[in-house]
Amino acid sequence: MHKYSQGCKAGVAGVSGYSGRELLRILARHPGVEAMEIPRESEAGAAVKEHTLDIVFLATPHEVSLEAAPAALAAGARVIDLSGAFRLKHAAHYDRWYKMRHTRPDLLAEAVYGMPELDRTGIAAARLVANPGCYPTSVILALAPLLASQLVDGDAGIVCDSKSGVSGAGHKPAAGTHFSAVQENFRAYGILEHRHVPEMVQALGVPFGDFQFTAHLLPVDRGILSTIYVKLARSASLEEIHAIYTARYPDGGFVRIRRQAPDLHGVQRTNYCDIHVTLSSDSRRAVIVSAIDNLVKGAAGQAVQNMNLMLGFPEDEGLQ
Image 1 (cartoon, rainbow, N blue to C red):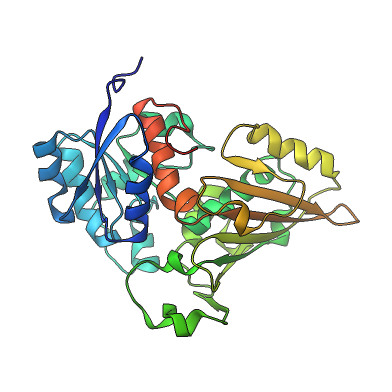
Image 2: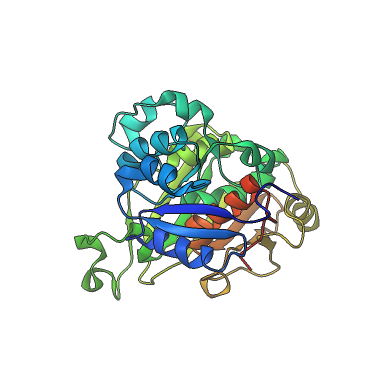
């Protein structure tokens, strides 16, 4: 029996955004959690003390999380940050990719990257978890097993072509996400400059020069589908590749290895990541397709999965 067997108190800051709302929706059905809104993100530390919160979720902009996370930690809570404020290990990368100066390199060193399928032990022990980005979740889960097997020819490069629903751009209105700009349209953005690139490169352990990523905006509300192209270092059978993936992601978890290419309908409003691999006729090229809901497995659902590991609940509690 874990210390939270009688329930824990969680606070959610940033409830006006899509991810914050999704968090409250999921936590409302979690049997072990009493969740509350933190209406003013800048007062996260005060909310921890006033309400004796065990854990705080920050569904806030990067600059806000940079201030709110240290305050909540100092007040005694554990923190899951859904922004990018603590995902990268080098403060200098924030100048380059996030256009902001990072003032807490000590917390960058402490933060654990919160992808449960890759680091359950580290997440369980963490005070501060950096929840992965939505695009990185779809790409990293798809590539990690194959890269670990050393089957990928890194010198040939990796190409990731990802498409996201409009909710991935956030709740704040912008000209490029208005209905008239998105409906009956499709476009690429952030070409060679997308801020999620260093996060993916860091997690996968590949050089920047060997990794190409392009994001596209789909005229749908939610979901991400990533198509990833790799060359293999040697010939391999589809059965061998399938065994590599099923060994990393056994049946019963939130990553499902599919015999057919996944689509968005299969994962929307769930915490699943569906992955399929197609092998070329010469057995030297692989195409990996992954699909997630950007607001669930790509944000709030993965955050709750991390919370379950941190607080000792079953990993799928509240997510099925």
